Structure formats: structure tokens, C-alpha cells
Image (cartoon, rainbow, N blue to C red; front, side, top):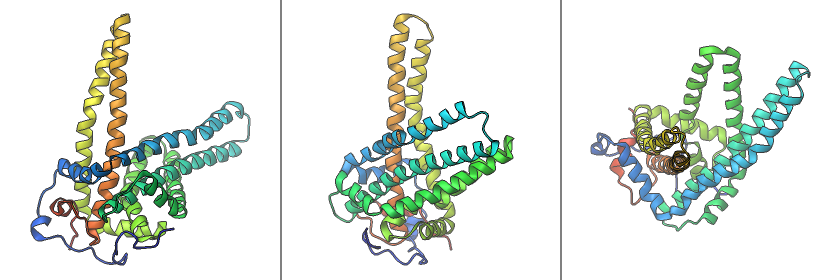
Length: 307
């Protein structure tokens, strides 16, 4: 297992990140600039984009048995005890969430490790990235377990409330958890902290930089949304052609729709990789670690410590 500080000498978790230069702190950063900064790192190791692809594939494969078991149970145990039925459903849901989260976090850690290795002057490969993640397997499992527990609690409370309240709780609690845990994976990789300590440090960084970091995330999200509209439009055109009902329309429209669907998947994978790399870079900048080759004005504009 890697030791704390393997990817630079980060300050103590309670330390206040260094302030960016005044001129940089006042700069406005666009989603395109954030995307460009992340791509500047990933472009040197394009094979790392395969990591979120592998994460998606393995997650689907891994959860199929649990989903199938749940479906079988629902179809054959209608007369069972309501309490037993609820317990089995909750257990299967938790296991499914835990397995899927473990796989997702594993490949996120691999990607962040590759980004750090590149920034530190190394030449990462898929093998070195996956090996780095394997060394952090205990922390990955711990963090995935905590995330699954929190996710399950949120869902159970929301389901208990029901109606509009269910949607509100799912939305607000989910967003709050996502924001608080934004830098957990970069912290685990950089400092070797456990999940609770990493979560506390991530939440502390977000608290001290709430406005800037949130706006940066929104800008990045808007850019992703706009890019996603392109394959989505292609998919809709394909469906419209299929709606003509003719044989030619069904074949050609199906092909166009398939291109749109593949485009949506590709955009999702690409931006997933960029977002993971960007969080790693912003975290390094925030705690005073070097980020060579990256325009620090962009990082400063995305992450500014509040006084």
C-alpha cells in the first residue's frame, strides 16, 4: 500500500491551502478552459480514458447477478413475510450499490494515480495505474462501503417519506453528499488517509472554497451538457427517421440512432475522465502541491480560498 505523501508532500489535513496570486484569484474561468486544462494532462496518456470505460463494463457485469437475484426473489416470494421481504430487498440493494461503487472508485483511484504520476514527471501506463489502485484496495473498499451505507440511508429515508418529499430528499441529500465527497479520491491517493479522514478534509476544503469551487463545477457541467446535446440530437433524428415506418427508414434511422447512442456513451466516458483528472489537479493546487505544465490562472480561478 502506498504511503502518505507518495505523490508530493501535501500539508497536514488541517492546513489552509495556499492562496492563489491576486491576479489569478480574480480571473473568471470558463468551462472550456477547465476542460482544456484537464485534457492537457490526459492528452499525454490517452489510454487512461479506457479506465472509466472499464469501470462501466465491469460494474454492469458485476451487478447482473444481484439484479437477477432480486428479480427472481420478487417474482417467487410474493407470499413471504413482509419483514423478510424488506430485509432481503435492502440487503440486495446494498450489496449492488457496494459492488458498483467499489469498482467505480477503484478505477477513479487508478486514473488519479496516473494523473499524479504524469504531473510528478513519470510516464504512467494502464498497468502502473491499476497497480497503484490495487495498493489502495483497503481504503477503496472502506470508502465504497461508507458511500454505499450513506446512499442506502438516503434512499430508505426518501422512500419512507414518499411523494414529492422523496424527490426532494434524493436530490438535496445526493447533491450534498456529492459535493462534500468531491475530493475524497484525490486525498486518498495523495495523503493515504482513511475514508473518514479523507471525507472530513474534502468537506473542509469545499467549505473554505464553496463559491468558487461550486461555480467551477457548474461551468464544467454546462460545457458537458452542451456537448451532450450533439449526440442526443443525432439520436432524436434517428428515431424520427424510424418513425416514418418504411423499411429504409427503419434501417437508416436505426443506424443514425445507434450513432447517437454511442456518441452519448462516448461523451459520458470522456467527461468522466476529464472531471476525475480536473478534481485531482484542483486538489493539488489547493493544498500547495506543484501542477507543472498547467495554467495556474485557470486553477486559481476555479479554486479560491475564502477569508
